[in-house]
Amino acid sequence: MAAPQVQGQFKKNRNKGTSKREIRKRQEEANKKSQYNKFNELQPMGHKSSQARIDMIWSYETANTVPIYAGDISLIAPSRFSTYRGVEFGGSIAALPVAPNFYIKKRWKEGGVYVASRHQIYSYAPMLYWAQQLEYPGIFPPNENLPISIGIKNELILSKPFLKDLKCGSVKQPYIIITAAAAFDYGIPIYDTSVEMMERKFFQQRSGVILGGGGFITARLQGDFYIARDLYGTMAIRALFSGGEIGNSIENNGLLRYKLTPRFSLSGGYWLTFGKGSEGPIMPIFDLTYHFGNKQGRQKGLFTR
Image (cartoon, rainbow, N blue to C red; front, side, top):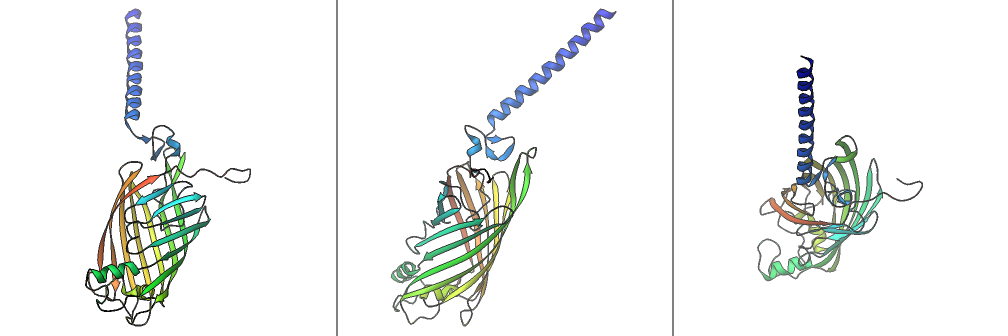
């Protein structure tokens, strides 16, 4: 009676081991098919996967910068690049023919709170020229002399990331970033015009910069969110203080960004304004972005992290 019992127990243990091997084999096959790291759901698997960029949640409006020798190339949003740690520069490619622009952002502090300053130069003169040539209604009177001005923007940005442990607590990633910023735009006139104020929404409160000889102050509060794997969101509200007949305004914009691949993302959203001015108060936003470069590494040195 003992021999059959031992034989049955042996068969049971053998089947149990076989079952474990099958489960392990299935897990290995599933991991090979998956492009994501099981220890970090924001980071793709593959050759040198630890170097893949994981800063998608840090938008260009936050106080952080893209990693050194990395950047984003967008159709609508500002494209950006870095050649020195903590310094970023860029501008909108789509806006170059109508509103040439360039900015540089310097990150002064990182850690619990990120602090940065951004300095930008731009001009709306080409936009006014093309609008007048095409007789586009509401942007500029057809028989007026075109103004030429250069806008200068100086902005202080503070961002607070809230971190989340991903997979066994081995990696921490921001899942919410709250940003507060204040900026001052001023237009330097090169050639004056008799027009005193723009008529369309989005332009009226910016008349001082567009026409030259005036400016406005911006206060901004923004949230960037990691919603789910490959999906990110941005929600911002800003107040523009122009004063006088131009008036003040409140603007709100929202954006959803979906990471199609580790290198490409697709965005869609809106820009809404509550203020004086004619025409529609909302503009749709669609964008395609190419992300290149590696993630930011640690600083080298005895007393740096």
